[in-house]
Amino acid sequence: MKLQLIILLSTIPLALFAQQKERVSVLRPVGKSEVNISIGGKPFTSFLYPDSLEKPVLYPVHAANGTIVTRGFPLNPKAGEPTDHPHHIGIWFNYENLNGLDFWNNSYAIPADKKHLYGWIKTDKILETVSGTTGKLGYHANWVNQHNEVQMEETTHFQFSGTAHQRIIDRVTTLKAVKECLFTDAKDGMLGLRLAHELQIPATEDQKFTDNKGNVTVVKAGDDHIANGNYLTSEGKQGNDAWSTRGVWCKVYGKMGSDSVSIAIIDHPKNPNYPTFWHARGYGLFAANPLGEKIFTNGKSTKNLHLNKGESVTFRYRIVIEDGETTSSVAQLNAMARAFAK
Image (tube, rainbow, N blue to C red; front, top):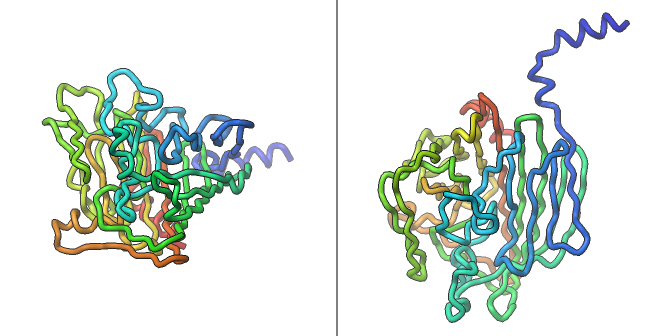
């Protein structure tokens, strides 16, 4: 009997064992504004929502091999990494212009006399934490102005899963208008991720970025021997050419240490203005923004989103993080996108 079992096991491809799902642990420490997620007994990410942050974030984010794929700054700076855009923390979801308030660019760096121009996302309730083959985390938050007047309610549900070389985050966020809400077409939104230094595209010249309040951030070029990343979209756009184009998915990939790492964001057909525009910058911002059509098309068309009081809109995204000598091919990412669409 043992011999027969050994023979049967030997006929199963080793790849099948590698793809077995690992257990996900979702734990909320007592007295802390965080939820910690581990997969296969190793840290994956933490959901952070303290009052000191202007929005909730997933930070840091690890690949299955333990490599941290998000930038450390500003919460845990690493030597030599860029310190631009202090509002870029881990993975987040917000928008540049909701009812005239800028939720995207808000951070500790905004002067006190300018803070009234910005919005906060304040998490007030953890709805669920579930551990298992698939981990689950749900929360409720309010999008508010400086006077804590609620513009929208947010309900978000995450599902986390992983194998020996893969991590997946599925995010479903529903925004309900507490008062009439207008998302005015703007560049900065909606799902954002700030990449580790290695996954940046090497810069060949200094870059200046100005937000809608006139704040200028300079990203310096130089002899960067760390950055080696590249973008690829479902439509075949590569590198900096991915920015402002549309696609079902976009991935960034590069070497981190001796290993290959890739991160893909997959859009969903039920999302507004599908397929999304990619706000994918070489300096390390990787974002999906379906509502930035005006700037992404050089003014040829505009996409504003209006919600009457009580109306809601839902956004669905899948993030796939992989490591190893071979990460998902175009055909495999297309298959993932089809599966996610169902």
